Image 1: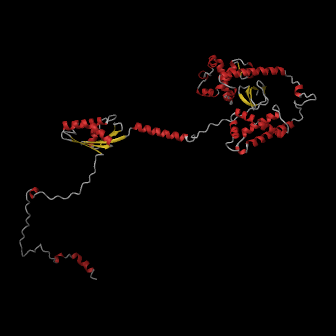
Image 2: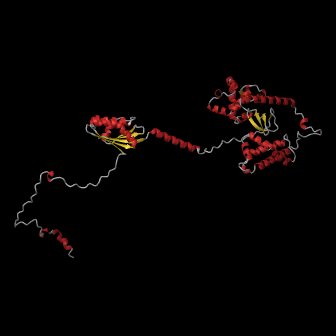
Image 3: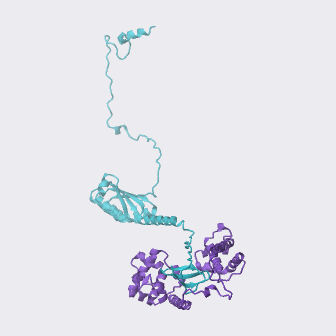
Length: 238
Length: 255
């Protein structure tokens, strides 16, 4: 593969940018489906597990590819095939177990017949309510110039940083001025929030994440707050 | 770990973990609002900082700029010498002048010169003022008197020499007219190297009287001949000249 190959360029960019990876996957869905078909010898729907396995395998190929491995598409095809083989082996190990997808004479899936004690209607309603809450949060964050992707990119990955963020959020929850300033100006009041210069640098790096968390913890969002209940309880870290 | 699915895309989904972190997970038929314990997180590689073409040269360039700035500042601040003035009365003094026309150093070139400048403060003074004050000091301390001479030798480029000359105008007038002092100013540029010809001995233009009174001729003593006494003026060897000490030795060579 030539260095100036546009696919190679996209593969390189996709290693660090998930959105580019997503676009690349969408563009190469026919290729992925084709490779799955070569292995399963049957058409695979996007709702089937094999499709997810093939897609994840393609992205793993993106992440682990370098030019010494030959052409990217050849390498990706091998990755998809290997993942499908692994999945088959796993399935073989569980062959004694009956799949919930297994259908009876009336073409009903076993999973639909067997009850698990859960109220699926209630769960569905809960999911819908959660979805509404998430969409509302997304709209509010947009007013702050923040997207979910921005929040994810700014999210602390290290435990120590997460703990500092929790400390700062707790501080903001106790100090109403900070929250009022945030909602009024749509900007994070750095001076009031940061204890010292180092904290200010950390806050600056994770500013969008802090904005999102403060909005979540101040403006209702009961379901999302409930999801985080063991981290934040009434504005106090546990 | 429990994940709340926030946003769904073809490949991935954004999920809020119950520890408060937002993460990317592979989209395995997720939908927004769904909660799951089974999500495979995606670890993206960190973006490499864009390589700048001069990144490696940057420290070298910084050092060079620093050196250039330092040298430039040094030149500006150090005020380098542009020439020297040799003031020769009898006390001889060298005056080193900086570009800013201030005197940078003063040195007595002989004992009187050292004495003249011993208690004189020149720091921060202009060359004209120092020349004025040194000449006044030489007058007041009796080195320069009516009918005396000053030689000022300017060692520097023509512009410097011109400046010094113009600064000396008032002093020269004062010295010449009020003190009757002869002032000689020479600059390096005016100076000519003259190789003197080999001198030819001049014919004596003096007379014998120029050497004082005529000396009395020396008269040799009169010698009277005497038959009993030998004439000393004529050498004639005789036996008495023979040294008997060598006789024995002489005999040794007879063989």
